[in-house]
Image 1 (cartoon, rainbow, N blue to C red):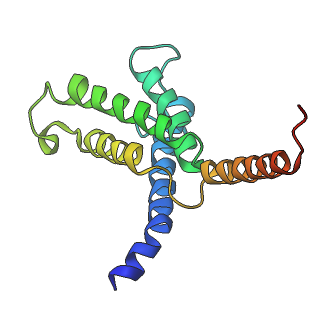
Image 2: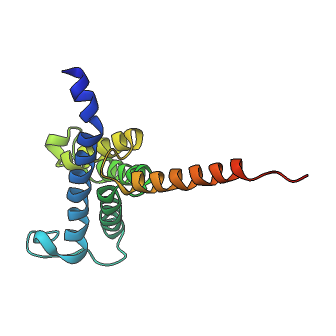
Length: 153
């Protein structure tokens, strides 16, 4: 049983990354474009350039999209995790200590989820893996060509 679960780990991680990235990108799209109810449930948006809301929304949309695609996953996850830590400690935590009391559950969860992705990587179904495989094939071909090429003195 453990062997089967271990062999499925990259696929489960890939699906986890896709869902988390999609949910995070939806938060950014709602804040920037007013879709999915917007910031206030009535289609409202965050004013462009306002601190910290607009910048957080950009990080959510771009970071979530990159994580969803599995492109630069570790870097995007690190920035996204940091933005959610900032959101928790600057916006929610001053209201009260516990996330259940201060409305910061989503910020705390996203912070820790993205931090996990920093250490685990993208898993299966990612552009990171496609690019790495293409580089590996190119590097392997270059190495094979170099080994066949005679060295002139």
